[in-house]
Amino acid sequence: MKNFFLLVFLLFAVLSFSQKLDKKIIQLISEYENDVIELRHWFHENAELSNREFKTAKRIEQELIKIGLTPQTGIAKTGVVAVLEGGSPGPVVALRADIDGLPVKERTDLPWASKMTGMYNGEKVPVMHACGHDTHTAILLGVAKVLFQLKDQIPGTIKFIFQPAEEGAPAGEEGGAELMVKEGVLENPKVDAIFGLHIWSQISAGQVYVRPEGIMAAVDEFRIDIEGVQTHGSTPWTGIDPIVTASQMINSLQTIVSRNLPLTKAAAVLTIGSIHGGVRSNIIPENLYMLGTIRTLDSNMREIVLKRLEEIVYNISKVNNTKSKITYLVSYPITFNDPNLYNQMLLTLKKVNGENNVNFMDAITGAEDFSFFQEKVPGMYFFIGGAKKGTDPKLAAPHHTPDFYVDDSAMITGLKSMSFLALDYLRNN
Image (tube, rainbow, N blue to C red):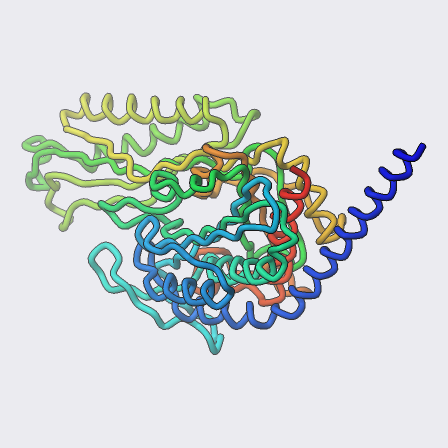
């Protein structure tokens, strides 16, 4: 009986300690929220392209040093990593934020709108945080600041990963999560689980959307080069026409999804988004190229699409007497939420955001290179709302557009979610 009462006392003590720690986290988040918003504005105003996030990385480094951490820089070119060791041994959890912007000219009237420029495909272009990575970066710095204040009470280790080039490395370069993994970011100390979030302009602030298993599609970006024989447009029989070949390919490629895939199982998309060839109406060009993307949510369906792509391109090229080549430019795996981790951590998301604010979502055909981390360790990826409360989120500008905007009120959802996911994972494991 004595042992029973001792056990009850210890359980009560642990519960009381956890509740006090949770209250302290909420208090610190409230204290630091404005600082995080100011950081978000700075990152937004100083947007930089993939693998060129030099000012961004320097500011992240400076903020981590201010917190009391010792950052590692130059990871995967411009990435920054910091490790927080808790007061007692335990698992290692990683939190990730992506830090790069896009070649988009901002059209908002924000006082902190970006006026930055950069080089993209050999051209000087405007640069904007048109996908919300500025918020991700500021949120993770805020989480680091909160958890550092409580480090003696943390049972384990937290690794903060600030990742460059999520939008894709420049041509001819490596980058992003894939390069970070290759360089050992999930080792020393070895990560047991990883969490990441993405803000969404067309969801109301305060809302969280998540699902188990596949949440975002695998992506395969490709280029098709077609070589013919140039000739005068009035005598096409004296040349070999790559434009006719390309048009036949485009039509046939659309049959892969509609005629070769079991679409009741999962969605898939194949899009040709760019075609370049020719200079005049009366000249059949010697060559052209096309750019396309494939999105799949099932690995077997992905294999079918890639196989059929090559069959269609090379066979149509053959019957038209052209020469063709397929080059794969970017390939990301499916963003896959580990079911066991999801079942465990869904309770945390509901606890800190309110059960009615955490929603099950359908998988989407957007892609994320967070998937490279999830290939190596269990991971969970989720979305938080960015539309100002009281506005219609359906009217918000979508991501990757000049009018893209997410409201500062969304930041607290990210701060609470990431702080408690890290802490609860360590406490529960």
